[in-house]
Length: 318
Image (cartoon, rainbow, N blue to C red; front, side):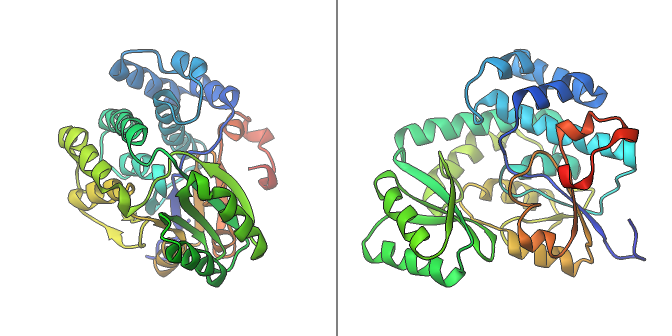
């Protein structure tokens, strides 16, 4: 879409979401662009990506992370070829920062695979020894004032905690110690919230500075970053990301800084964006009200991409 000189379309690469192996693997095997990326990733990793992905248990294994990366990029390329997708700005909340950096031209695909694998290894090692007893709890339908009341009680009790994501004005992800989780869920419910998923390991906290330093030294030191070809928006504050160093810092800051999606939405609106195209299985960013109230949202999923154009699914199933 084009509206004079104004940006109207943003492509969003989501954080890792539950995706049925059968749906993603089928797309990665049948789609031409996906097959090429799978082959390149397999060569870099030293094993066949889909074979390992099929036998690995869990969505945060190396093979699942890389498969999700490949799937997001292949879905974007498929949309370019099938429907002429030409986004004007790129954003990637949480893990989505990695495919976003590739799509924007700031990181080569091979380096993104190495980044994804190396990052995952550092995360597993770090949380096996530190903050092993911490989790993140998502909660919808809770006003900011009520969230602050819960956080104030945790501060008063001297309990470690952090807000990992501000997904919407009434949707947060809070990290706490395991032993405090039942209390947190009870408090969120009592204040009218709807507790949803519990995730491990947590992420996006200033407490994890040592992990950021480790990833920077062991993984990012071997990667090449370039100035992005497409404009990017930082998922932590909505600021413009225009240089190679800014891309590097934005992705690394995903370890220590909370995602602030309402700030991203405001920044996209200021750029004139009217449409979001979410490239990948998404359970958050394209579905919350601050997105749907401000943009026309289309989600590109593996299942939808396999449907022939004449038989495309209605928007409600996207």
